[in-house]
Length: 306
Image 1 (tube, one colour):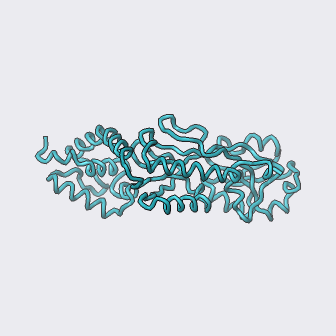
Image 2 (cartoon, rainbow, N blue to C red):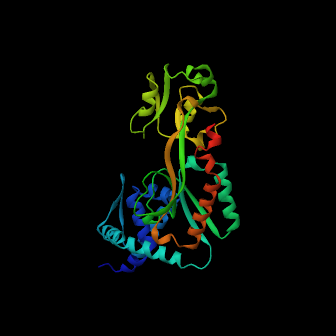
Image 3 (tube, rainbow, N blue to C red):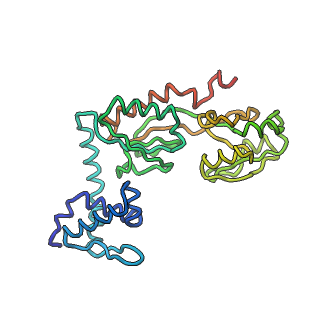
């Protein structure tokens, strides 16, 4: 159809077209691919020059696909699953424990012990390059946006393969000073109980808390743990967070009167075709050992319950 249709076989060009399409333009593609805006622009211009075809019209409002660009993009969408499958199968057949591992993990989970454990893995396997993607959403492991995902969930996707790293408990934490001055700190649940709620909660006030504290009220709502913890430190109220996160806050205190409750487990997940890749398997086993050693930090044991 086009004189230089050999570009259709160039996976780098197809990957570039998909990134620009999925992430809203050059800037979004650059953020996704971890490079600069100028780098993506140069790659696109070079690909168009090599093919002697304009993939996009440059308009004041941004890029607009040409007819040729639409043909290439449609082709990229069709061949992408097979190309990703080929990449995964080739990774499995690699003999050396080397190469990149793209790991996506919620930023709140990367505490000092886990960072030290990952550093130990990197030192033991210097040919493996760890690439971290701090993200709370489940990136598309089928499209190789990540090779491994650590996720906090009760129901991991059925299309992925993985294992549960640990169960978790959660509890309410408050500023130690605020708690000392409140009736709640003395075990009185009948007074004013301000909480920092999360937008992701099914209801602004957890049902169990509502049952125990008749005067509970939402003092503020937060999108993530970082914001909530700062509001708790300021004495605005208390909030519910996982034990592993609450216990490392030096200025916060567990609200013992409200007890512990079950929280979402932590899973490690990968694409089924990658589970036997040497470097992927090695990191999964390493992380499983780490979470077994550190289990007491995530769930309430007899000692911590007392």
